[in-house]
Image (cartoon, rainbow, N blue to C red; front, top):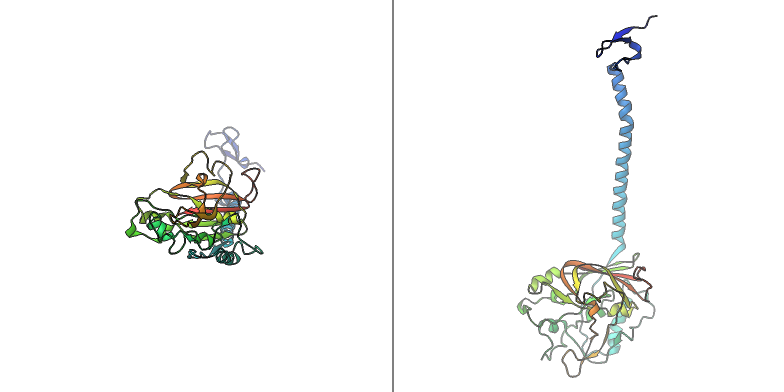
Length: 322
């Protein structure tokens, strides 16, 4: 049977129809509708299948990411913040008993058996005044015989062991609006979180409220009270990350080098009273910083001096300024 010939619509040459392609110009006969549809299906089918697999992977990845976020959120437990109390006039024994009560009920440190306050940190004496948070913030210590009245500024640390570093309530020598005085002036935490798996404590402070009540203090220079960290043996500190602040000493500070903390409570005379008060010492410029905006300060803490600041911390402490 003779093969049917056809004329190429492009070059005019005749070629055998069943070859489908003109040997002269390589024109190819178009497919019929049915064959064209099947060809399209064959081409699109694997592409569609591949697309569905990728979409499914994206969904799985999203679910996995969300599950990871949920797990991480669940790992953080909120710690109850205990209020300040009056310490003035109490004996060393009474203050130790109060401290032990809060440590024994601590979400982080209750596992410590036979806890007793570190003698190098608690060098306090019986029956002395402790500086009042209200008096120091609003009226200062100069010619202030009432400086020990009311809740003691250091009791926020003593009553909250998880506050490894807190702020010492400052004395405002000038610029404070006493008619707009608020407890935000104390710079106490608004929330504390504990992540047992990561051994990380996060403390949140409301810098925005502070600035609102004291608009003249848009830059707030604070120095921390690290007695809680030292009480539990965390003497070494390094700050690997920070935002919204700068250190007073730009060269020698805990962002630039490993530092051994030294803070303790003892009898001192900065309160202005002749008989003295139990208060915090010493002033450590390496840790003094100025908060200029919302941000945070991340601290790595060790009990023993690490060979490098890159070593995993024994405890991580993050201060958030909101």
